Length: 431
Image (cartoon, rainbow, N blue to C red; front, side, top):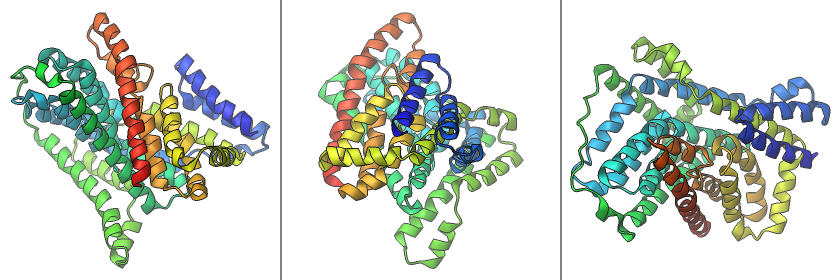
């Protein structure tokens, strides 16, 4: 039965990749067929495997953050951040990275940021002489790192997956902080090495012709302040509880904080202030991502019920030396991420194995969670993965697209992979 569930997961990924049909839909079908007809589960038990908490949190948070997308707040904020570096061209890669990080961290999400930042980045590369690979990696790294922020889309998903795997809420928050810091600091090192060690900074023009963006209008300013207020509330409670573990007031407030419910309240406030159109906000939600994450969650739950996860964890624990387990997880995550989503497939499949393995091998769960995410996001710039395909789709002509395909596959993806594995090795001895 464990072999069947593993094959079902692999088959769902292959079918989704080949047919371009959402992987989550295949996962739901396999969860039903295997669970009901091979394992004897009731249909109601299979329906109950739909990860309702993760779905609600992603839905409510993305709904609130979508107002900033719909009314142009995030796009205008991106223009202002890029405008600030116009007098120092060597700052441009860092500006692209930080802009993508900030916008993704404010809730836009990885795919949304790449969708509107990648065309801007490629245009800047042409106008300033910035290397295409450097620009592509900067915007991709920024979108990934920002989305991993504790109150942003990927960070919320990671925390939910950790909670489903049996990790305490406070520990899950701390682990998500480690994931964000690792995926934020690693790109800065890579960009610096690519920019100065290889001499790419010399090819940049002395002055950048970036038009001064229009100031934020009153609705956009209200959206920005409302977004910052929600982020402050969501982050202040767990941080206060961690800083004051014995304080009853901090513990009580933290126990009442739920990011999904808070985001729902702030969505109502945004609607009352008329900060965006409700129908457009709902339409802009990442429905395909939600279906993929929750569908795979059902199939993974069936695999857990079949004992697949425990058997895989036991095999890894008895076969691979403990010091190499985080690196091995990073390599597996990177290979999976070449063809599948980090959020929808890689982390839902690998995170459940972490608690048992960490206990068995005496490893830090934080290290293993971080190694998985760092590895999974290492190859996201491959042209076969979501990030690389979005960057390719932003190329203005076929000639540039063909050149960019080769560079992303043979330069950007290997650089990202090597940097991630070195990071995981370093983390193994630090955490």
